[in-house]
Image (cartoon, helix red, strand yellow):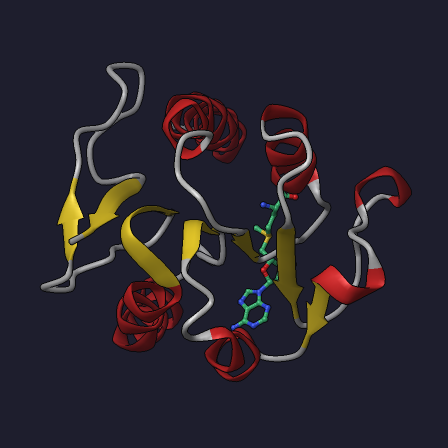
Length: 159
Ligand code: SAM
């Protein structure tokens, strides 16, 4: 598969998964945490799907399109491992993590800290969506929408 095809599949999967979880997240109290603001496309999608909900976005640096920049109080810059740790206890309804790099060795390092951090950020019953695995005893893996190939995306519920 070409990188272009792989990219298209990733974005389609993101959209389908976010649409699926947003219907449920709408009924769960708590803020949304967007780990990896990037260009802001998924932030923009979440903002449209969950109007009025607080969305806190994290990244090393601001590089988002002007239409997709959170309010200053909801933008947190720095290394996510450190910055998001300060939000433990926030009882998020949804953590969306899009910080995979496509490099196995780098993503393996992310997998050493992201699952535990995600579990600590979520309220019980809250949902996590991630492009890298979320193996953790408190994160129950949920089925993906039929359009999404297995092991490209991970959806979990905090138990
Ligand atoms: N979901 C975004 C969108 O739709 O535009 C794209 C996110 S992009 C693939 C990943 C972003 O995560 C990059 O902007 C990168 O700087 C950020 N990132 C990755 N790992 C990070 C880390 N450990 N700490 C802070 N930012 C990180």
